Length: 433
Image 1 (cartoon, helix red, strand yellow):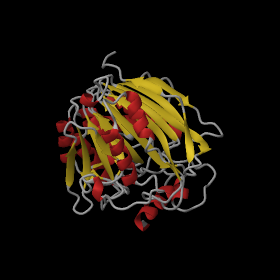
Image 2 (cartoon, rainbow, N blue to C red; image 1 turned 120 degrees about the vertical axis):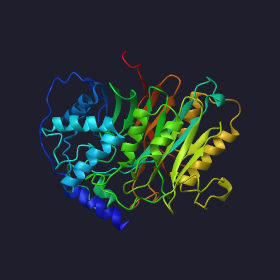
Image 3 (spheres, rainbow, N blue to C red; image 1 turned 30 degrees about the vertical axis):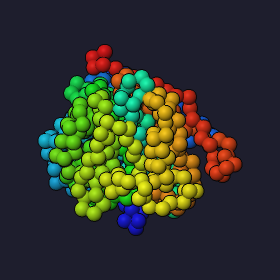
Image 4 (tube, rainbow, N blue to C red; image 1 turned 60 degrees about the vertical axis):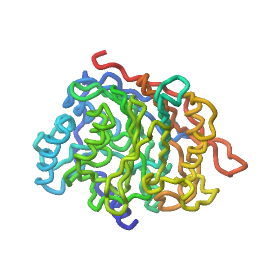
C-alpha cells in the first residue's frame, strides 16, 4: 500500500507538467464529438460520444485535439531519451497502429514524432490508471433465447478524487475518478473498427469494448493478483504494454480467441499499480478469463467450455470451486466472492434460456452501492456502479446506462439504490459505411 500511495502522490505532483498547445478546429477525422450525458450539480458524471474515421495518425491527432480541448490533458515526461526511443522501437514491432497514433498525438501537441521528452503513447487524465472493480457474465448463444452471444458488464469504482483515495482532503478543481467518461467508435484505415466505453486514458483506455469481428474485451481488477514489480504508467518508461494498451491491441487486431491469446503471450505486460484480469469472448460462443498468478506471474486461460462464464475481482484459476471460497461477511455485499456466488447462483437457478432482460437482471444483483472498506480501498469510501453494459455480439451493439446519483435507501440493507440514465444503444457500423 505504501508503494501505491507513493506512486499516486508523484502523479499529483506532475499533473501540471507537459506541453500546453491548444487544439485546432475543423478536423475532418472527427465525425461525432458531443456530450450525451451532461454533468449537473447533483449528478456524478458526464459522458462524451466520440466517433473518429481516418488513418491511425489522423485518429491520434484528433484524440490529441479532443484531449486538450475537453480534458486539458498535459503530456507526462519520459525518464530519459533512451526510454522514448525504446518505446518507439517496441511499438514498431508489436503495435504499429499505436505507433501511428503516437505520431498523431505528437502533431496535436506541436511536437516532432522523434521528440524524446514527452510520452505520446497515452492520454492520461484525472491522474489514475486504476483498474475498476467490476463484474461480468458471458452467455453463449446456445444459452440465450434470441440465439445471440450476450455479455453483461458492470463498471464500479470509488466516487471520490485521487486525493481522497490517498486519505487526503479534496482540493477545489480536482475531478472525481471516472467522472468524465466516453463512448468511442473508431473506424481506422488499418485495424478493426471498434466501439468501447472507458475513462482515464483517451488514447487507449477502455473498460469494455467490442470490434467489428465480434470480439469483446472486458477489463476487471484482480484484487488477489499481484502488480508487476516495475510500473510507471504516466512515464511509460519501460518496454512492453500496460493493461489498457494490451486491451486496445487485442481489440484492434484480433478476430478470435486464439489470436487474442497469441497477442497476450507475445507481449510484455506492465500491469501498473493495481493488477487486472480479462474476460474475452467472440462470436463462436466461446470465452476465456485471463488471470496472472500472484505467486510467479504465470499466465492462465480459463475456458468457458460452452457454458455461461462469470468473473468478478479475484483470480478464477486460484478459486475454481465456489464451495471453497474464503469466508466473507454477508453484509459485505461488494466482496468479490459474494458477487461471484450471486451471479453463479442466478445462472444455475434460472429456468429456460436467457433473454437480454435476464442479463440485465443478473448484473443488477452485483451493483456496487456500499461504503465499506473492500477491494483495495484506502478507507471507507463510497463505491458505485458507474455504468452497466449489455453487449449483443451478433448485432455488434452495446446498450449502456450510466450512474447519475444515489436514490432512496434500502431499509433492508441501509445501502442507497442507484439512479441511472435511460439506456443508450450504440451499434458498430460496418467498415466503409
